[in-house]
Length: 420
Image 1 (cartoon, helix red, strand yellow):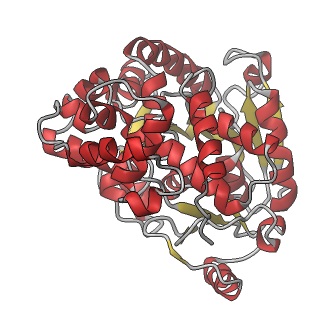
Image 2: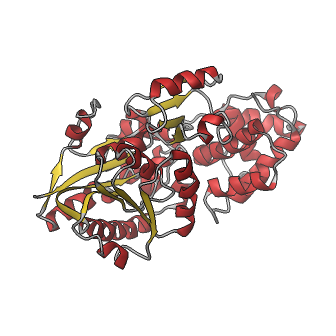
C-alpha cells in the first residue's frame, strides 16, 4: 500500500528531519519516538517519512553540493524526492509553491560529475580516505552506491518451530512475497517491507528479523547440543536466539551485556522463540566477576564487539555523520580489551568468534592480528572451511561481507581456536 502524498505528510517528514539533523540521538530512535507520539500515522505513511528522511541522510552531502549552498530542511526534502525518487513537478505539486518550481528544476539539472569523489560518494572525507586505503577507487564508489540504497528486509527461520520451505509457503499464503536467502540456509528475503509485529507467524516465533549477513556470524560459531556457549555482547539477542536454536535448546547459553535495557528487550523474543536454555546476565564491564567464574569452561564464545557500525549504513545512514576518526581509535582499544576478556572463557580446543559490523580494517583484521600475536595459544581457523561444512561457499580465512558484493550489511568475522 502506497502512502498518499499530502502537505500534512510532508510536514511530518520535515519535523522528523529537523530533529534527526541535530544528531543528538540515533536517527532510528528519533523516528521511532516520533511515530509513538503520532500514532495516527499508518504503516505506509510511516514508511514514507522514514525512507525520505533516511534518503536525506544518505545523499545529503552530494545534494547540498549540487545546490550550491545551505538548504533548509524543506528544500532538502524536496530535492531529495526529486533526485532519489525521480519525482517531478506533478508528483510534488501538493507541497510545491510557485517560487520553488524554477529552483527545483535548476537543482535537478546540475551535473554531479564535477563533485569531489568523497562528496559524490556521500561520505565524510575521513571515511572516504580510509576506504581508499583498503579498496581501489572504483570499488569504493560501488560500495558507497550500495550503502546509499535502502537495505532489504531479511528474516531468520526459527528451526525449533518450522523450516524455511514451510515458512516460505506460509508467507506466500499470507500474501507476503519472499524468496530463500542467497547465503544463509536460515534466511528468507522479503520483496517489500510489510508490517510484521502483529503477524501470527511472528507472534508464534516462526521467524525473527535479522540481516542475512548477521546470520552468517552465528553460523560461524557452530554451536552444538549440550555445549556451554557464551554470547559475550548479546545486545537484544538476535544472534543469541540463533545459537540457542543451533543447540536445539540444550546445554547452557549465556547472554552477557552491559545494558539492562537491551537484555530486557531479549525477554519477549525468548518467549516467542521457545528457548529455555538461555541465561541473560547483565555485566558491569568486560572484567566482571560473573565472567571470571566461567574462565576456561566455555566450548564456544561469540564476541560481536561494539564497533562503529559503518557496515550498517544502509539502515543507519546517520552513523557516517555521527562517527569520526578519533572515535574509531577509542573503539579499537575497547575491542581489544573485550576480546582479551572473552578469550579467558574458552576451554582448550574451544572456539572464539570475533565479529563486527564495521568496514574498517582497524576494527577488524588489525584487532585479530594483534590478538593472535599476543595469544599464541589461539590459531586462526579459516572461516571458509567452517562455512563450507554448512554448504556455504564464501572464500577467505576471515569473513568479509560487503553490500555491493554480497547484498548484505557489511560484516567481518574471524574464527579463533584455542589449542587443545
